[in-house]
Image (cartoon, rainbow, N blue to C red; front, side, top):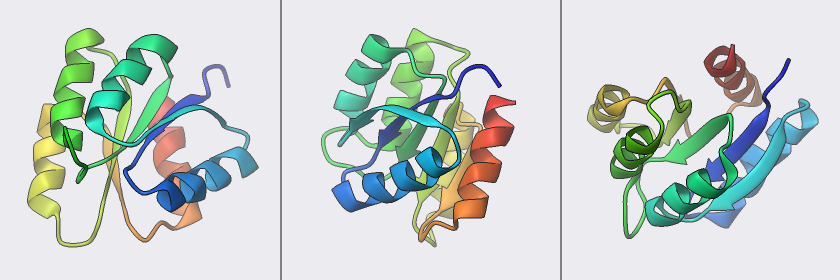
Length: 121
């Protein structure tokens, strides 16, 4: 499958590490990480990843704002949101902003892979 370069965005380093671990074990290539929405937009522009996995709640610029900014740069960008339980309204908002899917924390490896494969398919 062509196009497996992924950018991970989360303000918690251990969360980024967990996702990175799941993805690399399944043959995906994590080409960058960002700790907030501002950095996410910069990294997206710089790296042109095939997919972005984006946390919703972050300092400086949240995930929903970052999705809107990235979609403004590239309307075809693939973005999956991450959210903790109970953030349903934010999930709906991020899907409306252009995200393709969402995964709920704590992560289940199968669900991450399923969402990633589907979004890139």
